[in-house]
Amino acid sequence: MFIGMDDTDSNERMCTTYLAALIARDLEAAGFGSVSGDLHLIRLNPSIPYKTRGNAALGFEFLPAEDTAEFRNRLISFVSEKIAESAETGCEKTNPGAVFIFEDAGSELKERLDSFFKKAVTDVIEITEAEQIVSAYSIPHLSLKNGRGLIGALAVCGAMMNPGWDCTYEYLAYRDPVRWGDQSVSPRVVDTDSLIAADQATSPGTWDTIDYSEKKYPFPVCVPSSGDPVLFGIRGESPEIVRTAAEMVVSEPVYFSQIFKTNQGTDAHLLPIQSAAEMIPLHSYILEGTVVREVQTNEGGHDILVLADDYENLPECAAFEPTGNFRKIIRKLIPGDKVAVYGSFKNNTLNLEKIEILFLAPDISFENPICPVCQKRMKSAGKGQGFRCRTCKTKSENKAETAAVRKINIGFYEVPPSARRHLSKPLIRMNNHDKSENEE
Ligand SMILES: [Zn+2]
Image 1 (cartoon, helix red, strand yellow):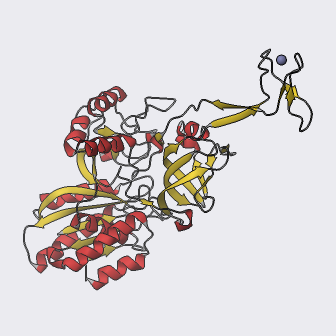
Image 2: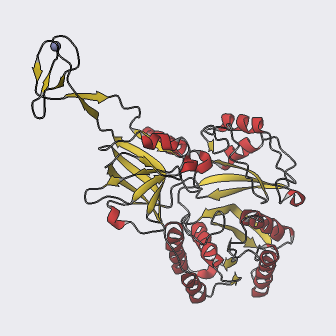
């Protein structure tokens, strides 16, 4: 059977990953059966406005010890009670949901949930659509408050029932519950030097452990600052490598840890499109365009890039202030440059996550010509009269063209780890994939 759950966390406490890992352990300890394979951590459309913190759904496949209706009901009650007592239902945005899908559910549901999973990552799903599915297939479920959590609960089951999507892994170490909460009372104790050593020993197989681009670098981006149960998280390409890195970390006592299979770092939210006309708010895209004007920095410190495709100007592309040095790259673009932009479209702005510079236009400027005889700069001889050297009277018709050296190269650029979306594929992964594709 597949168990999916979503939306049990609040912005400050609890974390659905922790609750899912705990429930998996408790089910086994209570003799209900055993977990089969990986626990799954699925990130949904990052642009959804009513999401809780990370917009994550959690799930796992479970092999029940008995196959009777009575046993199933006891198992469902056990999980539902755990969720109901732990979920942060006091938080306005927290609307927990869980689903229980048994092996006899049929192949039609499997296909339906495959497309539902993809839609939940890239598109906007209404609660009613999730409710229609649980009702049409008589799926046992838990739905608290407005039931929005049913969306993620079904989506993660769709992901587990239809494997084969690009995946990464995250090792999450949790804090002892007595230490949760206000960071000024019980700050996380994780040794930064050990994180750097772990990063250097396992990169490029792991990423986003340390942000070296920060001014206060090296910044341990894998250690959260909120009151939730997570002590640190190591992201990487395989369960083995995240474990290797995590075992090098020196920290306060770890309450327990769990490795999750996840769609983080895969760009699964991005839809490649050909034209800006296809853009719909709350979706994320990859599209190409040509820079049409100098990049401007607005009052908020955000850099605004304006592109055009073959037909029209794109909505403004923004490199936000927290993206730090990424903005310096964006500011080096000039009209005529061709780029592919990667990001989410929201409030009529595409929020840049990555950019690929495809073509650099020559940076031409025009100046009065230099006199070929005495090497001095010529002066204008009057409107429409060309240029003349004051010293030797040599004449010239046109201004001189000079091409400045571009201080930027063709290729990919990304926001720093501390500004990265969970779903964004880090360049370190793209490079590895390119290599393996070339080797084949
Ligand atoms: Zn001269």
